[in-house]
Image 1: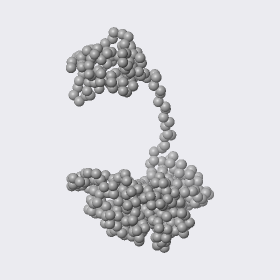
Image 2: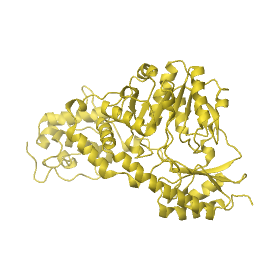
Image 3: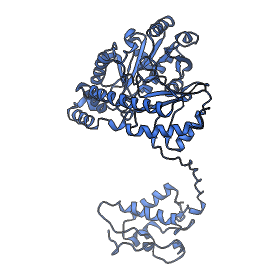
Length: 488
């Protein structure tokens, strides 16, 4: 294939000519360029040159392009190159070809409808301080240890580990998680009862589908409670019934007034109130599940972070045949890992598999990395360091609030990564939250987690992902936002 020195010549401007009506050389109009190492094949470059000329208006709609043989002779290439380029543009709608007629341009920039102007959302000021709950200390993620775990399993993974993954999770991680839950959370588990999932929400969705398949269509949830769990239940097809929470946890007596045969509860640390389900209500929940032939779904939400004494054991150990246990590393390591577990009663295992036939576990190498992270004691070490850091951060936040927001009352500070700041009735929290956001502070109203708004005013203040040096200025912005909102 031959090319003119320096390529086929410069392309013409859009106001130049219609080449079908002039004697102008097509090689000059179509700047295909000389062949270069690694560039696209010639027919692709010719199609690109023609497409660009049409888009730019240098080839107008209705103009005839040369016969393939004539253009091939002019460009010094095979006829196949031209027919391939024409065929591609016909398929894309830029050219039209009819038997017995010339191939013509069938597209014009003027006939293309203009793209609708996208409405830009109003720009929001950047968030300088984030007191919203739900995140751990992302700066403290153990990057070096995690990378070491990933390298270790990448080098040691056997051939079968790289095949189709088990939808219930790799046996190594299921065994390791079962041992960890028995040792640290007082659970009654074995490898066969543990499934690996993408987090607590994914685990709840799978469980709800299994409940629905078993004829349980009504689910009770805590009020206030984590909205994503409610959304997972409704998206799985269940009817959701909010049940109030007080300073002893879920009100079991109110649960009996609903048609629910399953309930989601944070027994060790309820979100967002921070309460611990009392021993009497734990026993009452187990009795209720047996009486209605139902299940308790225990969300073990950030219960590892307890500061006054050892973390409270899970309910699942009280009756493994009635309690489903959900957990993840989203609040201990990072939600970006997408790793969690579901511990189900043996009687529910067939329903879980049948109701979730396309469920997939997280990537196998990530699962094996977590198993290594647990086996080598790095997870326990990370939790110990995190508890010390969060306890110090919590103490600073509570102390600073006492100094600068004296009308507020703090609760739920014994565990977790957030506290509640109760404010006088009549406080305009909606306005305060908006005012704080405008100043660069993210806040969360407790009513955002309730089924219905109430007259009781409180903020949910997270301290997991904010540094100690940021707490005083963040509280100062909070004080300024609450100034006009708190009644005198």
